[in-house]
Length: 245
Image (cartoon, rainbow, N blue to C red; front, side, top):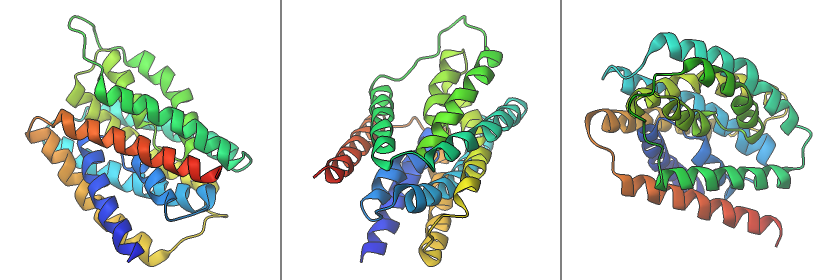
C-alpha cells in the first residue's frame, strides 16, 4: 500500500514539475522523506536519479514546441554538471537535520516565486554570461540539497532577459546532467529498492513529458503552481517537525 501511494504521488509531482521545467527532485525529497528515513543515503540518491530522468523528458516536451536553445542549454549543462558534485560531497559530511533546514528555506523561496513569479523585462537583452557565472554557486547548493539547480536557474534566466517558456526549456536540459553527476558521490553509500526505483523512473518519465507538453501547448494554471508550492512547504515543514519531536 505504501509503495502504491509513492507511485501515485510521484506521478502527480512529476506532471507538475514537468510543467514548470524544474525536474521532480524538489518536490520528491519532502514526499519521499515521509516514507524513507535516511535523507542522504535513500531520499537524495533516488530523487537525483528521478530528477535527471524527468528533466530530460521535460526537455523533449519543450523541444517539440521549439522552446529549447540547444547551444545555450548544452553549455549551461556543462557548468552545472561540473559544479553540482561538490555540493553532494559536502552533504556526505553534514548533519542531515541541517540539510533539511536549508532545504526548507529554499522551499520557502520557491513557493514565494510560484506566487510571485519573475516577469521578463521588455527591452532587456539576454545576458547568458551572467547566467553562466551564477550557475556555479547555484549548482553547488543544489548538489548539497540533493536536487537539480532548476529552482534557482529558472528565475535567474528570466531575470537575465529570457522569455519564460524559453527559460523553462533551457532550464529543463541544464538540470539533467548535473542530477546524474551529483548522484556519483552517493553511489557507494546509497540504499536502493530496485523494483520501486524502476517503476518510479518509468512513471516519472511519462508524466514529466506530459507536463512539459501541457505547458508548451496551453497556458499553465497559476493556481496549480501555487497549490504545488504550498504543498511542498507543508510536507517539508511536517518532515522537519517530525525530526525534532
